[in-house]
Amino acid sequence: MAKTAEPHVMPTYGRLPIALSHGKGCRVWDSEGREYLDALAGIAVNTLGHGHPKLVPALQEQVAKLIHTSNYYMAPLQEKLAAKLCELSGLDNVFFGSTGLEANEGALKIARKYGHDRGIERPEIIVYEKAFHGRSIATLSATGNPKVQAGFGPLVEGFVRVPLNDIAAIEEAARTRPNVVAVFLEVIQGEGGINGSRAEYLQALRKVCDDRQWLLMLDEVQCGIGRTGKWFAHQWAGIKPDVMPLAKGLGSGVPIGAIVCGPKAAGVLGAGNHGTTFGGNPLAMRAGIETLRIMEEDGLLANAASVGAHLRAGLQRELDGVKGIVEYRGQGLMIGIELDRPCGDLLKQACEAGLLISVTADRVVRLLPPLIMNKAEADEVVAILAPLIKKFLSS
Image (tube, rainbow, N blue to C red):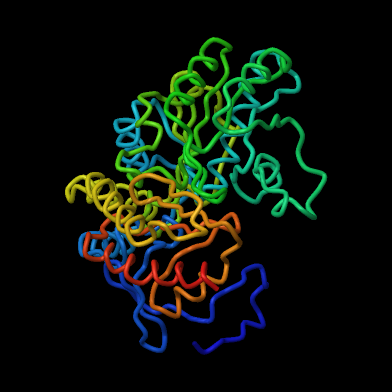
């Protein structure tokens, strides 16, 4: 691995010393010709892998037509993608931005405006320990990670933090915090370590929000778009949110964000309340439309469920009885393996072995492969990763 200096790039990332040049399917190659199996998908972004034969020509065609106009004009591709997202979610309307951070920031604005419209001057939003919603000042304040908040105070006020899967904490907030207007959580916390919300917890939360006229806002930026085997992770609990931020996998690599709203939230924002320059541009909309179409045509929800179960079972089989494994978590192709110690070194070790993964929350090996991954490729992931984890834990 040859390290390349980047003297003109702001040093906000601790990069691995490789430069990726091209990819095909679930594999990528670096500038020196070395091959890697991609079990990260650009952090849950490259839904269709790399160079997908159905996606590439559609995006090439769109680039030749229009890349960007502005939101001054009618946008047929926005309406087409919005209609599809509403069909899949059972919700009512959509605002398009360019990132998950934007989608979450917009959700926070919706909650505050909803509160003000109800006569609450200082509305509060319930958020969660270990949550991650972005790095703007507001989303950073909603995030539950002191490390990423450090150095950026004062944080934005108006957030009430509770532990995940503790309905008693929600009921206590309902009794003691009269200004609460919304609950905001990831159905599966990605950056926080692949921590899932239990189905019965989500169902109880839906009832509390209905009883209190709060908005239930479910951040599906990382766990949505088929990653768990359903279009959206909350669908496993049989509920619907009032506000659902999306991004990452929706554009298969083209930057896109979306806020999908149900009846309680769909009319909160009007002309002049929110906006974006790049959001909803024709290229991003075409990427979203084609991504959802290809996912349906190729049965990728079922694939995510079956290959994800196969991958997790393989890891558990190979790591059974290994001292230092704390827990396996996740669903579909969103898998976390918690170890009993910090394991950031595994990131470089896996890369050197030809596998791209992530380590999050210090001790959790995170796998987020493209949804096109097959069982043979999942077996390759196990064959590379399991020995690395065993060796790491025995050292």
